[in-house]
Amino acid sequence: MLPCSSSVQGDGCREFRALGLALLVLLATAGSGSWLYQTAAGAEVMVWESVTPRRLHAPSGFRVGEVVALRSGCPLGADVVIPRAELRAEEGWYVSYALARHLEVAVGGKLLRIFSAARTVPEVLAESGIEMGPHDYALPRALLLSREPRLEVVRVRYEVVVEDVRVPNRVVRVPDSRLYVGLTKVLQRGRRGIERIIWRVRYENEREVSREVVGRQQLIDPVDEVIAYGTNRFLYRNGRVYRIQRALEVIATAYYPGPECTAPYTDGLTAIGLRAGKGIVAVDPGVIPLGSRLYVDGYGLGVAGDVGADIKGLRIDVCFDSLIEAIQWGRKRVLVFILE
Image (cartoon, rainbow, N blue to C red; front, side, top):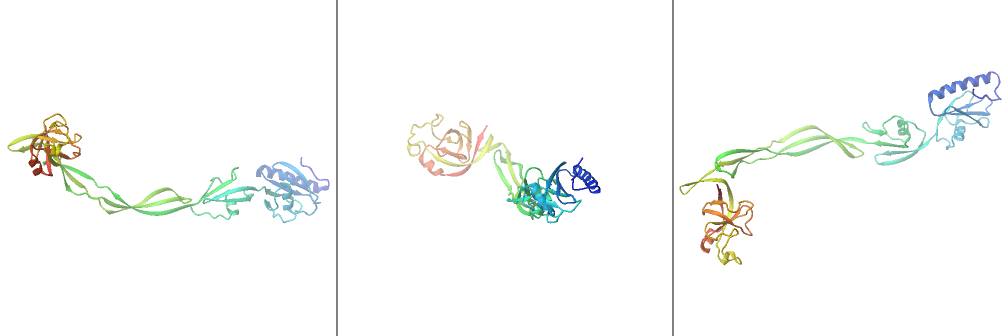
């Protein structure tokens, strides 16, 4: 049973009880909040928090906001009061208010601090004067504020970005029996294409978070590169036929085993212990294995029997028995065949 003020008699007391009963119904359905009731004499005020009644004594003719401020301990006007805080309470009024709290609102990287009694996200945004764009959203996404006193507004925008990218061309390899095994020939030069891609980029607080393709346009078509590779395994030289493992195009220089070419190594022996002379070819063992039988165009038969400090990659050094022959050979591009 709700308490009845001694200054209210007869019908007034019954009305107070009826209003009190209605108040309990409101409390049961409205959840948290506080309500204020003024008796006819204006001397007693009932402030309701949840379902627990409290009685306050206030001067006659008080304003609604004054009692709310007195009860909540918050600065006058810091709470949401219904009806307006400056009105004087009248008999039978139920006044609801919500206690304010400090809130932090992060907007696009900037932090706002407000003192508000708002309980929903739209209310906080309205009080803060924050306008939401068509794609903006707030965190938490729930309509009601959580106990965490922080709200973040994420600014979202979209931008169309045009990007021209290179499209790789294909490399097509075709066999050619006119070429020796190991050799290749470019029949058609390839060319990469260019494609224009139109992106729709999503930014949140000016940070890219996603992008999707909304359009493509081929500006330049790629051109295939066509390369012929050799399949011929037979070499015909000086009336003889040699079966080859593979052919290489190399730069060939010449030397002779005298001190003019080999000093300080003048013992006349090669890297694998053979006597240096015509038919010995210095090679890079990573390209041509030592001991391989060779045929060098313009030189003849030989063996990969030596190495050299400058003989790296597709380079060979053919040996002659005289300095004059080595000088006459000079430096030239030749085919060297690794024989089976």
